[in-house]
Amino acid sequence: MAIDSTPAPLRTSTPANIHDHGRLNRRTPWTILGLSLAAGFGVAAFLGSVGATDGLSLTLALALGTVLYVVMITLISRQIEGTRQATDRFVTAMVTIAFTVAIIPLISLLFTVVTRGAARFDIQFFSESMRNVVGEGGGAAHAIVGTLLMTGTAAIISIPIGLMTAIYLVEYGRGPLARAITFFVDVMTGIPSIVAGLFAFALFALVFGPGVRMGFAGSIALSVLMIPVVVRSCEEMLRIVPNELREAAYALGVPKWLTVLKVVLPTSIAGITTGIMIAIARVIGETAPLLIVAGFTASMNYDMFNDRMQSLPVFVFTSYANQGVDSQAFLDRAWAGALTLILIVMVLNLTARLIARLFAPTLGR
Image 1 (tube, rainbow, N blue to C red):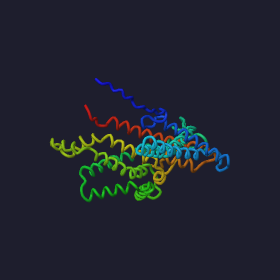
Image 2: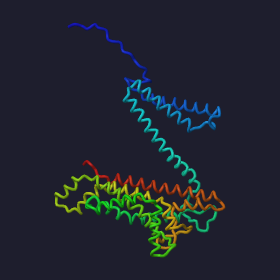
Image 3: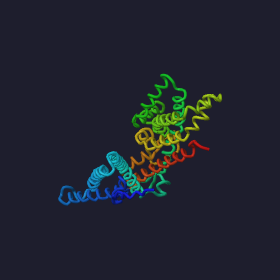
Image 4: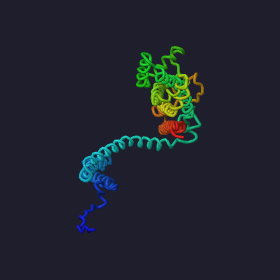
């Protein structure tokens, strides 16, 4: 048997810290990012030292570093990995930048509300009202109770109407009536909240006379805003239920109403619950309609049909707009009210996710 004595070709090696087999090393983009940010801060510091900017501008430094990183990672990737991978890295960098720009205001908002609202986030704030309080002290118990009562009543009104409307549009609605309902739901989705408040005020003024203020009127205004959101979210969830499930039930002789009740709704209950929670979170922070029809008060009120009722959004607004002698006390209460409202919305969203996970249909045995 002949032995091949031809020498093997020489293999060239590339430093592992730059790229491996035509691809950048995992640490290389981070190294380029660090060097780009350092260069951006250097240029910003130089411009500040010569008087071109007012000192070291953090925004300018980050912007310069980001632009330099996008250019450098694209050029280096094009030379080593090719055009397709360079395009992928460019698009990935732009998407990451867009996400960062979008989330920075949210983080800043949360940080500001938490740091400023923590000063009055105490037991007194959740157990006392503002009755006979003109300076420090007091709390938002009356506003929290009013928010829960009005939002809960609006949910009781809106959820059955919205869910049954969605069932009609998906399962039964055909022809001009269904198209008209869909059109008006789309219109109601985009109406300003102040219009809902004016509608509720005009409706109750016809019955109780001008100048009426009550919590139930606020619930009606919130339900006007909530119903189209519930209809839209429930309609989308019902439409994604496979038609095979309906046809299997029909083949067994199950009537349509029972198919909807026993097959369609249980299959989509997770998404429906999530949509309802999102609708509640959307209306719980409305200020304008409640300011018109429910008014504001410093006292506790549990009666939805008698006198004015305070809510958290209106409490925050009035605390900021109508500051007393001790303005800092009013501002602290406003920030604490905003923090409480954010926490309530967060709890609602977490509850929606938990319910969606618990009631989601299992695909396997």
